[in-house]
Length: 403
Ligand SMILES: Cc1ncc(COP(=O)(O)O)c(C=O)c1O
Image (cartoon, rainbow, N blue to C red; front, side, top):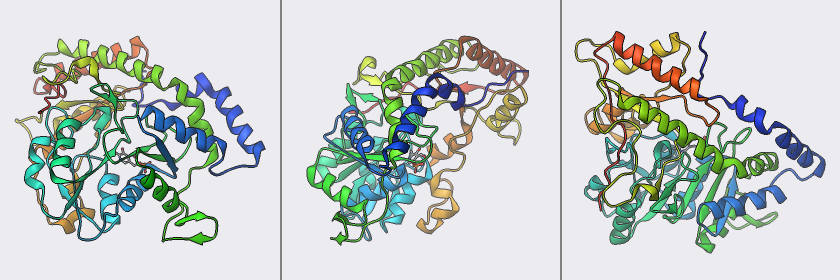
């Protein structure tokens, strides 16, 4: 019986388990458990691969987002523009700071915030834009940075899903005032628990973030301002440092799987050209200057017009019956989530996000997937499509960038 999960962290662990165990043992024996040498080294290394001078390790990616807004003095009365098609944490962070999330619809080819719609959402209260590099594909940073400059707005990059990605040859995380990443275990660089990091080129922002993450204190027991406890755990830092040298190889492995999917789906009846998996060929950016890191390999499945059933949901079910994991990230856009009902949005406000929420499905994606496994996944999807001719996976990629 086929058994190909959506993600298989045990396979990764098998390959470097002894190195990780040694690194964790070293921490346990060191007696230094929070923000020690591993934490400091990780901060330096993540800052470097993100094209920034400073890294500030924190407890998780959500805290990183909250602290980024806090350090930039964004709070009550301020508006922050972001996409409704992202993980809830992006918007949770804005709300937790007392600021108001303002949604701008997603682009249906890139799944990222549509930069062409941002300007219309800017008001005198807008303080920041928070682009998310969703699924590992950089948002259109040229267009976003041009708007930020013109309207004097801060930019906070939610880089939780895209560590190692490049936009025009520059790392995601190096464009905005601050960028936030998550090392949640399923991320491309995942800890063995929760961990997160902020990166910035601004020394004052870095200092403030260090203070805020440690109870508002630079010197122990002297509290300059209110803060929180969101420090990076040394064991997690040791795990991440052990994994970091493999990140490039792992991301390359993801690209290989993505290439296989792309080739295979080109031949699937119903796939609208250009087929799934062809990211980064905008007119303004050479493809080799846009590196997608494939945190997720996400395709769209057209809704079946003939029945009320959601074709994507049916495909997820049929793949599961055949032993293949898949998942919808994310089934309900944030503007219609109960937690954000207070914002007053309604169904129909962001049609692209709503369509994507109905149609996207992420397929197994990890560097350890074998050619045989990818071929099995593709063959199974072809079978499911053949059984239900109404299914028509459409292009989910080939982002069209403006600017
Ligand atoms: C886009 C995005 N933002 C923020 C987060 C929050 O990170 P964490 O789970 O580490 O709090 C995640 C991941 O979970 C994410 O995918």
